[in-house]
Length: 308
Ligand SMILES: [Mg+2]
Image 1: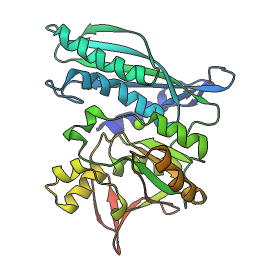
Image 2 (image 1 turned 45 degrees about the vertical axis):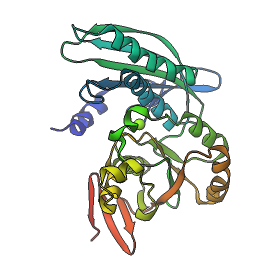
Image 3 (image 1 turned 180 degrees about the vertical axis):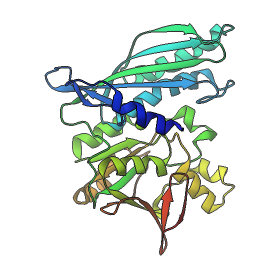
Image 4 (image 1 turned 90 degrees about the horizontal axis):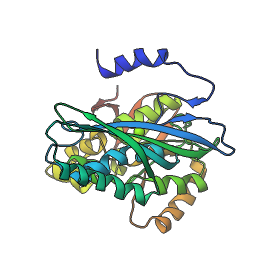
């Protein structure tokens, strides 16, 4: 049994109550706590040595990533992060200077987005250092952007450049909190997700949740310099890296066609240093396809082949 099959068994058994607007299956849980104007976003992420960072990774960057992953999920729902709790798993022989530096990384990122670190706990973790971050945020009621609202004909847009994050960006990404809030305030975002598993996987998540298909245009996909480096400048390997590498932590969103021109005009003025690219369209036909020149390929989670 793989992880996905296990989750599919566990999720339907989870108890819910009438406070839960959205449970498992989106970037954050959405909870109605009875606030006058807002819903609460609720998120947890475990960041493990040997899985999400190497033992010799720069400790400030490790702290940045542990909190940044949660912030990226709040951005994906166009929310505002408020406060975090941190559970730290410490090996018996820990280096206090390293832990202080990890916290310096957490604190610097938290301050940048006015996020309080309101507590946490430490426990023994025999073989590796672990950081589990839980985050609360808010979003105006009925204005959180879910994965599930995309419609056929919507354009698909992505921030930044994709692929090759293992060469550094996975520890140094900037969560797109500001951009998501800006987009939500000005445009009719139909659906959004942050790219943690890779474009080909996360585009599928968005399309499936929305009960649509998607067609991506290979020539439009913004390939990062790191993806080119990782691919030794081989064009098809670089495209594969941009499609399949994880941890870009960029935003992928669906927007009605009628808003494309306005977005294209306004974005560069608001965010001159961050690329925004239209990479495809949502379709009534389910499944994920890649248009490359005159060829239409069926896109799998970790590769593609000819569309029959
Ligand atoms: Mg996510």
